[in-house]
Length: 163
Image (cartoon, rainbow, N blue to C red; front, side, top):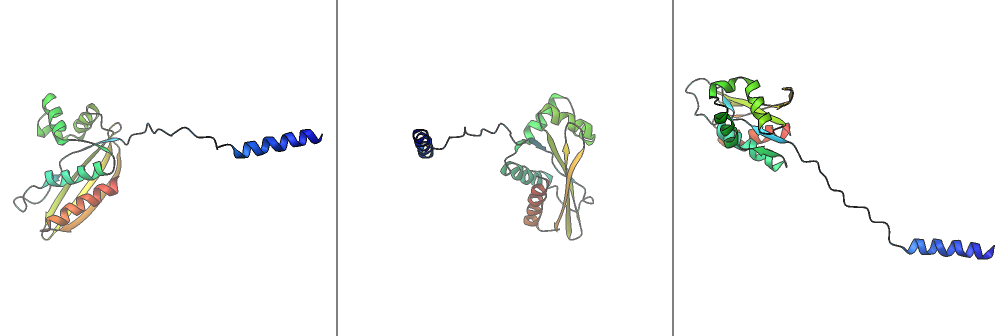
């Protein structure tokens, strides 16, 4: 009996000296989804402001990429439009934009508009699920009407809010 107790103690001692088991590295196959960002529409009264939709969209796209998402470049969106023989008037139909997003492999699309009235700019964004067309999230920001830096900060903040 004494020998069996000694054997058990010896086994426990050896076991406690062994290195802990090493878990296999976790490999994440999950990628953040691809997002297509459309140029923002200028809803300002005619002639009141120059069109800065491209610049605001570029800021949103940079924010999307900084968040670790894959962003579909504007050039790819335009190329898909040409291949489908669609003009800008076809883009007013949201189902057409969603179809283009599906073709390009986007899971989400960001649409939006801005409007400058008097001394204030308002920016509205919406993130839409391509597969269903369901609005997932919205964001609204404001900035001074003549403050371009404020506009860019508002676009970045709104994009971060969506993500």
